[in-house]
Length: 79
Ligand SMILES: [Ca+2]
Ligand SMILES: [Ca+2]
Image 1 (cartoon, rainbow, N blue to C red):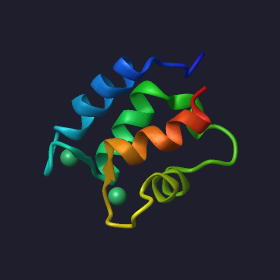
Image 2: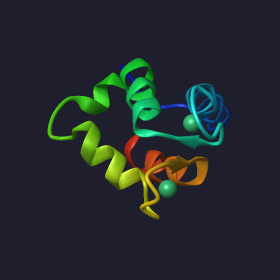
Image 3: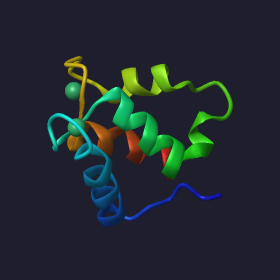
Image 4: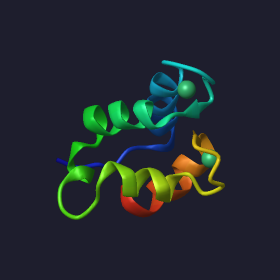
């Protein structure tokens, strides 16, 4: 399965999951888990775990993932 998505698709996917709880513009770890399991299950195969992925995504370390953080990392890994 390809993980390639257009920027528009990435934005709508991010917003769909980020709006589930707390800040609608930030992904919590639970929201990220749902997003990855539903949209990018292939990312959890191999050496990457959800914890690793969350750490890589949360670049400023505030415990949540903004759309900018999400996009920066997904540009690298979801091509
Ligand atoms: Ca949220
Ligand atoms: Ca963050």
